Amino acid sequence: MRLVAQESRPEGLQAWMGLCEVVDRVRVALNRELERDVGLTLAENLVLCQVAMAPQRRLRMVDIAGLLCVAKSAVTKTVDRLEQHGLLVRQRDPGDRRIVYASVTEKGAKVFAYSQPAFAGAVGRHFADSLNATDLAQLRRLSEKVLRP
Image (tube, rainbow, N blue to C red; front, top):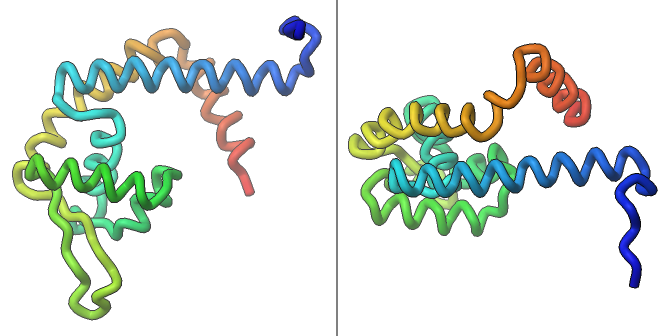
């Protein structure tokens, strides 16, 4: 089997593959740095971030999955780990026992406050610092264009 040269691939496929490689490499670098510096995986940081910034510092589990575009089972496992560390707690809705919220604990709020500068710095080092302001604005506009319904 012969590999197809990159140049013979359609432009859209080349762009897509490049974007995937950027996302994969940056995610790996962010995960490594966050685990080393903060003690959280990228997934744990993203869940903690979403919950900590939500109204009343709580979110339904299903809403976390929707915001992060991940499976509910992945959110469940991540919340399990954050609960074991004392950063989140699960709470049932008294009006509808089927609804489960993840809520930030006081310890979770402190870890969130500590982790966000580390996260922002890592995003800068592994992504944003490679681009100028015009590049970033264009990338944001292009992302919005692709994601537009």
